[in-house]
View 1 (spheres, helix red, strand yellow):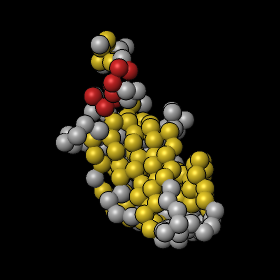
View 2 (cartoon, rainbow, N blue to C red):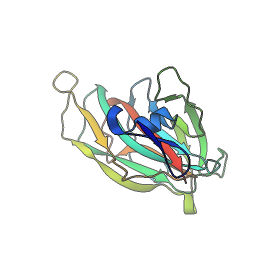
View 3 (spheres, one colour):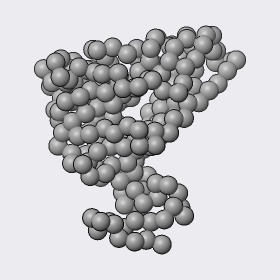
View 4 (cartoon, rainbow, N blue to C red):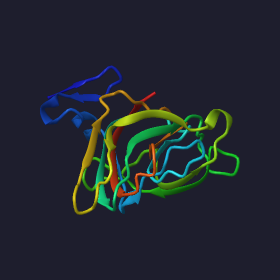
Length: 198
């Protein structure tokens, strides 16, 4: 059953799940690596390989729903996985901008076979060169950390963190995954998020 919300949008009960309304309305999407990658160490000048960028030109907030990190290969080193953000990331990639390089990847819509039609960008590589008010900031540490050694033959893990509205990525900011140390193994990462008007 649906009703009409205060801005004229259709609002559905949770009969089909908590984020059904956002998904049905084309606002929920998934960013996923297609090949395993090592998580970089947190730094003020960074080269993240899983980054979500909400350009300043977008009039939507990005609300992360959940992130999953799955072990792929290698021998781990003790460390914690966390998240950083770039404030004032703007809308351009250029020398002197917050990012001087950005390798875009495809964001998938939450409805199977329906393309994502929004403005948010997902990247599998970036060069963060921000200074002043666009220097990366530690956002939070995740629920996951590991001891050593974790080997490809002795252990496997999966991090799943549900944000439950605790993080919002406003227009002009970028979010990326990093670690407290060079944790060494490669992983697959997926982020589920939706957009809502600012």
